[in-house]
Structure formats: C-alpha cells, structure tokens
Image (cartoon, rainbow, N blue to C red; front, top):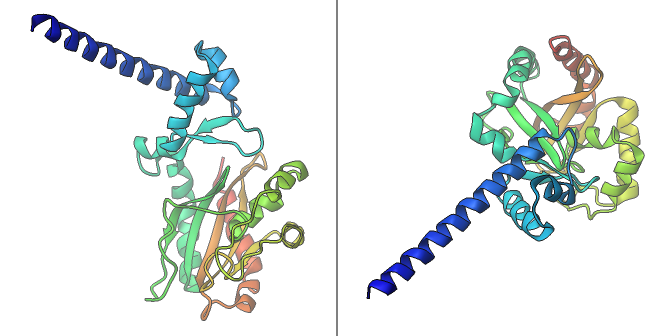
Length: 264
C-alpha cells in the first residue's frame, strides 16, 4: 500500500512539474514575441527559446487560441494579441489617444446627431476603442472593444486602400465573407472601391457590414505620417442616407485633422 501511495505521489509531482514547465515555456515565447519589433516566425521563436518546433507550435497554438498572440496575415509571423492588453487594464494602451480625441468626437456627435467612434488598425480588422452614442433611441449597436472586418466597413476599407499592393493582393486572395446582401465579395469590385477611397481620403459603408447601418470614416495620422486611428460617424440607414454621408466628407476630414493636431 505504501509503494502505491509513493507511486501516485510521484506521478502527480511529475505532472505538476510538466505543467509548470509548459507555462514557463509559453511565457518565454510571449516575452520573445513582445520584444520583437516585427512579427516573428515559429521557427525563430523555437531557436530563441531552445525548443523543438513541435513544442513551439503546440504552445503558440494554445496562445493564439486564447487570443494572447495573433498571426500576421502577410509575414505569417506572430505578434502580441488583444487579449493580453485586455488583461493589463481596459483602454490603457490607447488611453492617451482616447483622451486627445474625445472632445472632437463629442463635438461631431453633437453637431451631426449621430454616433461617433474612434478605432485603431489591427492586423485582421479595426478595433473600436471609444464610442460616443447619439441621443436617438434608434442608433448603432455598441462596438466598443470589438474588432470589425476590413472589407465591409468604412474604416476597414481605408486601411485596405493604404496597404502596399503586395499585401493587398494577398488579402484579396482570401474569401471575402458576406455580412449582408450589400457586402462586396468580388475582389476586383472591391479593388475599384479602394482606389476611389484612396483618392477621396474617406471611406463609406452602405449597409455592407449591417444592412441597416451606414457609416463614413476618415484616417488619422501621427506627426510621422503613420496611420494610427480612424474617426467614424454612423447611424441607421433610414436616417443617415448615402447622400447625407457623402455631404459629410469635408467635416470628417476636418475632425481627423483636429485630432492629428493633438498627437505627438
């Protein structure tokens, strides 16, 4: 009986030791990903952590599933995921940007009477970090802390329009998921839409993400001319028509410029 108890204790100890080792290795991979200035491949991570590729793949797969790392669609390397930022503190990563943009968002909301959003570009979509709702009872859903797709949103299409041709081609090779009956799913048709957006400097979504919602967005650049965010105005299609959206082009660009003046 005593030998059986000793064997059970030993097995439990081995399992615990193995689990602790897996956690240590996963944290080490997170550290290397966070330190890398660009998305890093699993092969390079395995070398840096002195792990075999199979172990590295398994750990990265778990981290990706939980949202702690994200795969870059172009390089196929890995970068830190949004779940990691959620753990630290809500909006902490974007706190300064939100504070500097908030007044402009509120002014635009009060002037036009529709919901205004602030979002940032991500590798697979746009993340809404702030939303100022209209006083109307019928309005946009709450997109705060959610990631929206690129090909059918007004801000997402701006991001696509600014991508290098090679990166855009890779993305357009993927299936364009229809979110409504108005979603552009033909790559060539979308490419023409992006060319128009590149010239006009604003993007629109006419029922493409939600057929009951229309929106217009303008890009926000920092002093180094890097794209850092988008300002978006949206509302129900019965109230905010396509014609009404297009009339807001200059107002949206002015709002974006106002925010840019507040950035470093």
